[in-house]
Image 1 (cartoon, rainbow, N blue to C red):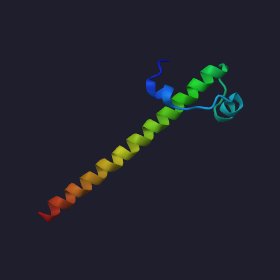
Image 2 (tube, helix red, strand yellow):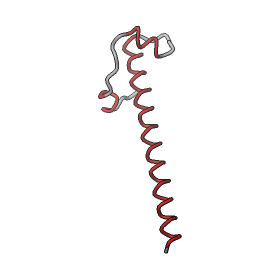
Image 3 (cartoon, rainbow, N blue to C red):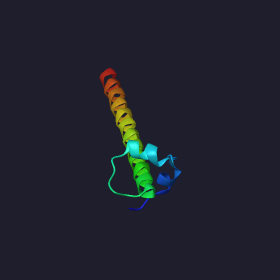
Image 4 (cartoon, rainbow, N blue to C red):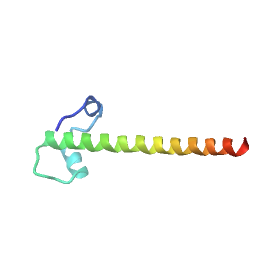
Length: 71
């Protein structure tokens, strides 16, 4: 798996016990598990950004609809 700069910038604990408590185990080592946690966190972050962008688009559409109704 290729990791972007974004993945490298996400701070993830190096405490293997905490990581194991967060993720199900797939027979990987601590470094691989930490990378998987970084990937998971970054994808959730992307999902949150997409959610905000969708909401902003919907708000913009409502404003446009209101303007058309007034004109």
